[in-house]
Image (cartoon, rainbow, N blue to C red; front, top):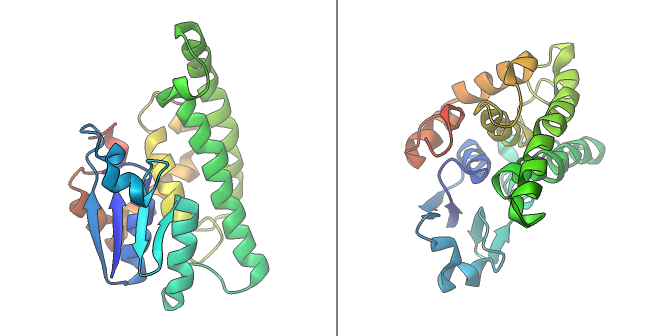
Length: 216
């Protein structure tokens, strides 16, 4: 059986939601970040990078949200979480890579500045840059939703939607940009939040709506 290792309200929630949407049989295990459980020998044996999410399969671990989302979509095609057409699937992967390499990294300039530079002055400079980059990135997504589509790739819900949901939730915390600039992104977030699978995962993770605040 699949087993997901996650941190509650971290971006690993996207993988958790996709597993729930897929109908797969799986177990989940919450990692206590503040207790350093992601740095234990047992966890590092699964993922030497020390990051969540980790999805343990019968062939070994799959790490990185981008890969886990793709794995679940391909392993459970009946759930319809990614298109079969190669070009359309590439668009899904392109968008998810944009979230991973763009928005996630921009947010890390605020939450983990020491990954990029040392010292308080550098941390403050990185912090000031975050809203500028956030507004640019979410502006691109807002434009993509401007044609009235309900989901990021059109009429069909896909693995991109819960992934965007997580970053749109973090945007509402108020420390990394102005969420009011992006009403279409916010409306998209509300649609994902209303889905039964999302509500089930929120209950399982025991942290409530991730948009309410850090580690709420």
